[in-house]
Amino acid sequence: MIQQVNSWVEKETRGLIKEILSAGSVDSETRLVLANALYFKGAWKDEFDKSDTKDYDFHLTSGSSVKVPFMTSYKRQFIRVCDGFKVLGLPYKQGEDNRRFSMYFFLPDSNDGLSALVEKMGSESVFLENHLPKSAVTVGDFRIPRFKISYGVEASNVLKELGVTLPFSGGELTEMVDSADDDGEKLYVSSIFHKAFIEVNEEGTEAAAATAFGLSGCSWSMQSIIDFVADHPFLFVVREDMTGTLLFIGQVLNPLAR
Image 1 (cartoon, rainbow, N blue to C red):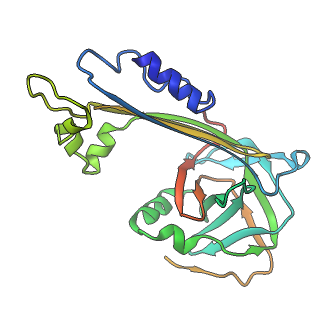
Image 2 (image 1 turned 90 degrees about the vertical axis):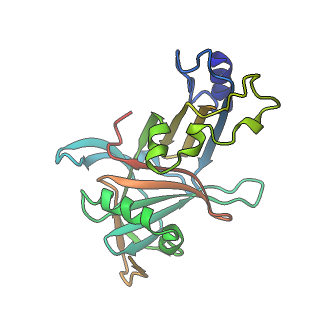
Image 3 (image 1 turned 30 degrees about the horizontal axis):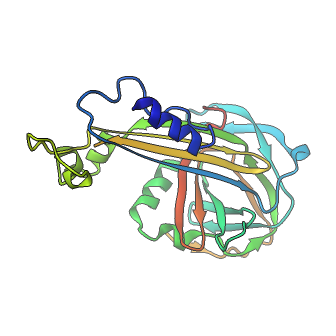
């Protein structure tokens, strides 16, 4: 079963995630494995010129810094200046359908301001809609780091802390299968494994995610030129703008970390 699930996930994520279930994650008591996968590859509407990419310091939360390749552009950008942070929107090329995808960078003003920004975002239900940039502005100093992130977690404890407890206690999952055990044993979720991968470079973004489980205000800036230098921890979102669907959301604490 483990090999079947892993092979399916690897195929669906174009090889970006090769293993979602490790040895021992499924045992003789496992009755069912549910898995899903998401793959996204988008080219920027305006790609970055690789010859303009240069190394600069990226400031870490520890107070130290690392040299990171930064992409730059001299074109107008979708930027919104907010109270304590700025938001950059980079649109992707549109495909054959009506969907429109963008990556948004939420950059706190201070080097150590990411945790407060994340808390603020989580506490306001319409935070994204109220803070996304709507118009392009002229930029001054403009730098975005290249980064590649791979992340994995066993998420059951996180969900329990958030109050999601019913699936882990045998809560009405038996009807998901055609028949229950002869002993009347109820199905319950024993563990949830999640992995994600995302890479951002001059051409665009490639990302994948897979999950398997066993049963404040903004103002329109009047500045003529706006700087946007993502040289310290920030949050990013990949979003389908027609529906508002979020595909990926994450934090970049160190662009060199894997």
